[in-house]
Image (cartoon, rainbow, N blue to C red; front, side):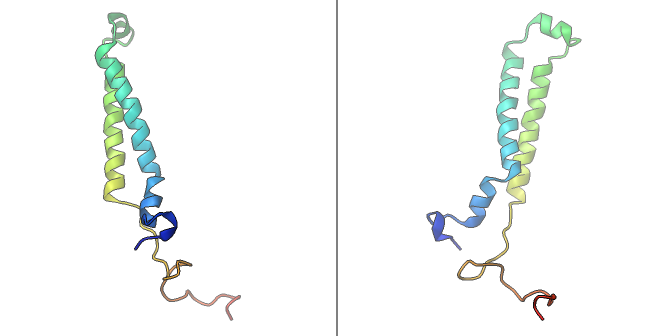
Length: 104
């Protein structure tokens, strides 16, 4: 099923593009890459002495890359599922709900 309003792109694909898990995966991936590269290349002995011998940038960068992979995997394994719509695209399909005070 495609929605002709967006050039034939499925509505679920458009909804998944703005999924918060994907945005967080992208941000964690970018910042994690920067920290990992800085930790691996630009760490001085003074920086290591300040952090009790631990390369903080490297370890936090690796942790952020793992977090990015977790968010991306979660978004891939459990994508957003939109409720089905009617043929004309006006709303959900299926039987109507129980009658309320406005449906009597």
